[in-house]
Length: 114
Length: 112
Image (cartoon, rainbow over all chains, first blue to last red; front, side, top):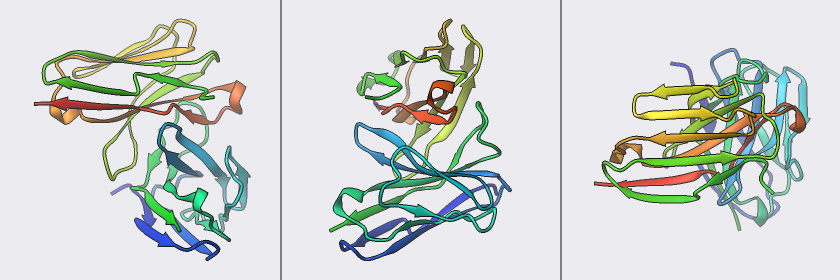
């Protein structure tokens, strides 16, 4: 079954404690991205990757890091989480970043930073 | 400021009613997509429209792309409780680096 898998689904952490949210896709997609979803703001792109070892900032990259060492994995790293990073996070993948391409989303990770 | 403005933000209707959700922008989009998101899940693509004036139907859902490719609408006929969810429009615009940008969404609740 084609899918994007995120882990964990829920995470509560304390300010400053480094964490990683994993994302894996089994569709051999080149393009992967991370979004955060906040009430009234929709989905905002954090980082994206057009292929292995190619990553770039999205609209709200501050406080986040990513890596793309393998095609299937695209982890999101919060080196020093802060309460304003409390949000619902989605990983997405698509065949390419080209217009009109369908984006496939994971089930989301609800992060709370206290 | 949202690049894509959706209205209404929230809609609560009775089963059997019709409704329209709007997605507007001042920018031209090369394509627009509509996604539906259920609680606890990620968004799932419903449709992509690419041509100005294009109309696509998906059972009781009708999607339209504006002639100038700056707006889109989603019309649901005879809404059912199973239509309940968050509807998101998203689009690709050269003006925005040709990457996928999302509206804030419309929460639809259909009561039986």
